[in-house]
View 1 (spheres, helix red, strand yellow):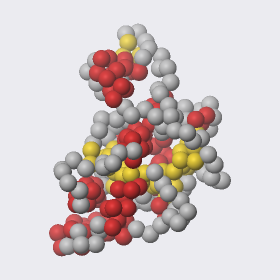
View 2: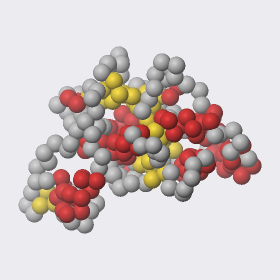
View 3: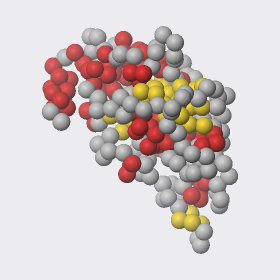
Length: 245
């Protein structure tokens, strides 16, 4: 699929499309059954042009299972609410992302946990999508600050209100699939900024974040490139410095 939005943004990496399927694409990268793996390296691989696939049996990270729509968090030894917060003395150290277990429990209850009726979640580079025969659920942009700014402005360009983009507290995989997928079910979906998870920050470039947008919203943004700020001199000044990188 060709995209005028992608062309205007001067992206460093390809946008990643997310598909749900019961058929596994041949030759796709994936984790190995019985071995712990994180979703982030496979997302980065997809942004670099590879196809990656996730399935229940090879997604061994508890947060990854929930983040990719494979149901509720598996039983976490000692309680996920303690792992996210203060830990348990003599057992494990908490991450300190929430002040206490009560807030950890509240966080989990706020997540739009879903169990998708599909076997596979597929990450595919946008240029490899046959848009006449394929319909992704979500588009994930991997962007720097200037590109994030442009996407945020464009997401609000043709919509009422000022909160058409959100930055939730969440894990990396929750921010680029679970939460955007929940938005796809809404009449007026929002885009989701992600990869703010401190645990995954060492796995991504320091100036990069994700911007996940439901496919329907992406198509609206694509149509709104023409006539928007992306064709005007203020954006061209910003785009010029990215081309020098």
